[in-house]
Length: 194
Image 1 (cartoon, rainbow, N blue to C red):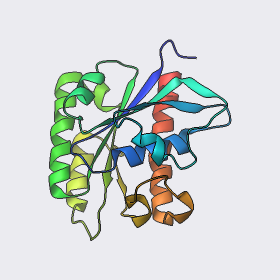
Image 2 (spheres, rainbow, N blue to C red):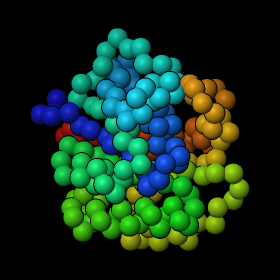
Image 3 (cartoon, rainbow, N blue to C red):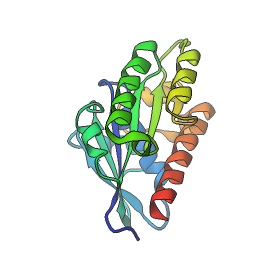
């Protein structure tokens, strides 16, 4: 058991890029029979309405907090990384402008916290309809900030609607991408809890 709770802060570079949706998916993916993460919500309850299976749980893992911070990656999200018990998930649009915005946040993290700060960061690029031409930009982020730091969540109409996420309607690519994000977060949790 850790001395203080591990906080996973999800924040975005702009509103409407899927921070709350990703938080809801991670809540579902990180929940185990031993307990579900605690939740922090900047949306005054909207997060609870997005949870695929709701928030009823017999056991809450008090050592793990998922915090949906919304579009505050370069403000409060940056400040919260001051604590070594905080992991950051930066959410941005899978567009050239989204990648430019997240690169600015990553550079601020490196300047303020060094490589140790970057080691606690995961970037998730959310795709919209169409084919983004961002492969070269994503490779540049990998080269500059660390292989594996950035993951892509494909466009999926089943994520776009309001209300509870119907996981049975998600595309296989979406499920695979969600599993990759959860696997990376679990590995970072494992490093912290050692």
